Image (cartoon, rainbow, N blue to C red; front, side):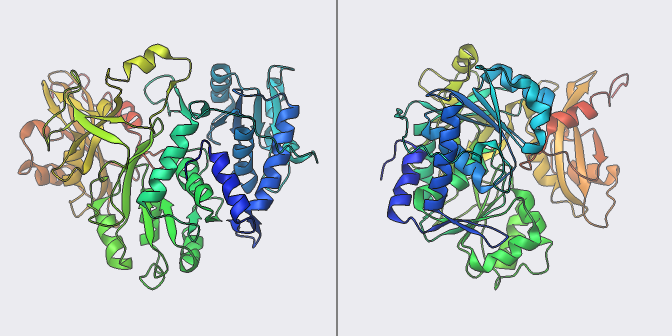
Length: 506
């Protein structure tokens, strides 16, 4: 069935299976699709009273709850644009988003209402609250608004701000068609149905937690085993009555440390998905040995939702993110010309399809610069396609190191470093060098109980890599800096080690 909006998809499930459980909560409560619709209508009424009309932005910085998903649907019901914000953002960071997006309403946690009171500007911005226990001003009214504002598939449904590690954060505008087409493609690709019970331990201000996990659930009438955050013990307990887990690589690293992760415990599961950051090949292999399940890796980004996925039926290749999803085109191109490169060659990963966003909020020049004339979006990722059409990601374009005029792809070195018996994981970065412009530094996390030495690590690489690819320094750290979705923050590492070769002769 084709839906114009995710609200349409949700209403279809309410009408067809009103008593089906949408939220199965740790405290034993169960909230049905019909009960969720009642919450949606109460919130929509409050938003209407706050003056929200079609096209208005509603900024949301709240903790995870069933009511927060009802708020997402209520915003769509008003024909407005949902703008989820990371709960870790500070007031100073919020200033930028509010100034840029000009939302009609800001929804915050009740405990933060005083902090945001100064933002209320009469007819310009209304501050509302929403807590995790059914509290907050959004739910105080008893009126219900059942009328949905008509929208077009091409209208904005959400704005997601990029992490902004390379300058000012950009608001990616996702349309209703972007969200529904991507959810439908994933439902088909991963064989998702109303019988599925999905362990949801992800945040809901991010593509993975909201527009993959929640949207697929809403589209099919499935159930969310809804956790406030990842907790290995709780996930282990839920596995026997779940069918799907969607997570980031750190979920699987922690599960592998749990003694009760067994094939028997996972016997009812049919799918484990990993994304948002690369999964270590050793974790992929260890998980398969322990559980009998091959983790399915996929590839997506803020601006496009999901682009590629290892197959549900067929070979799931560790180290790859699989072929393009149905309806999505991926090419690997010369970064300068956009010309398609031969199989196996590393280049710019570019995407075209109904999932690709409409542009950056109020940044027409930046938007134009990120698209080719033929409509392909330049993702900023580097990768290659094999003969079967499986995509492998080599890193970000900004992570490419040009040392002495030669291109070095950090991923190639990281794969080898991760094979070192004393290394748990690694990150390779480029830092300034007086002779070569840039040179390579390997940052490694030791395996449990190990203490890798710089000389031994460099010796390990010496016979495996050309000299220009070999790191000139190795630094051992307790942990790599990561964002909330588990992605290594190389910009932070580059800053940390920027002066390593300053004032030296190499």
